[in-house]
Image (cartoon, rainbow, N blue to C red):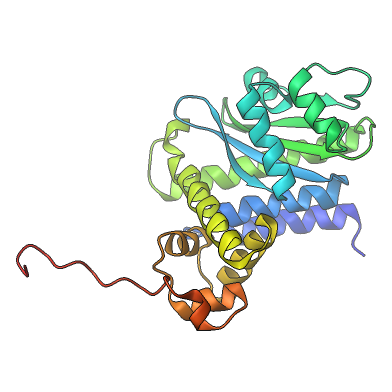
Length: 263
């Protein structure tokens, strides 16, 4: 089994290998979220990104539970990620059971068996563009080494977003990160469609989408859009669902509509 130092080094090597012009930003950030779980013994992690209005939006998470907790923070307008985004400083909270600065979010986290929550700022130059968040099953403080690793991973997420942004040849402002946010919306739509049609959990739906995208060397967001728009070929839909092509009826590729001239 790899040591934490070896896994951390491998994470940054993987990051360097994938930062090419045509990499998949959602896949990369999801992988970083999963590595946080391994490196920091967290139950779940999430990455939030600020939009054009400086409002945080979900961009990646290690699990559906982590994603729901992130969304609850945003909906209730309280929690470590929001405090971190506003202040630009890490928010490290070892035990919600003894001191809870976020009544609504804290109650939900405790009910989920996650008494320790932490958030780390993601910086692009002098701007805070998002946060990396950790959810822990044990009420304990993070060590100085844990904090250093978490902040390093937050910086890695920032580098990935900046690279994705620069590859699109746009101005370096937070409002221009809409591509990543739009990709996340498409993936959520596809997860919902697949979960409903296959009768599986959202976590399983996401795992199947990622596996199919990897096996076909496709961008996760591109695959998600074709599935959500019901333009994915039946054979591909059947493979993702683990069923026969007849079960994927309704996902056959649409024919282009007739043009005005043809009419």
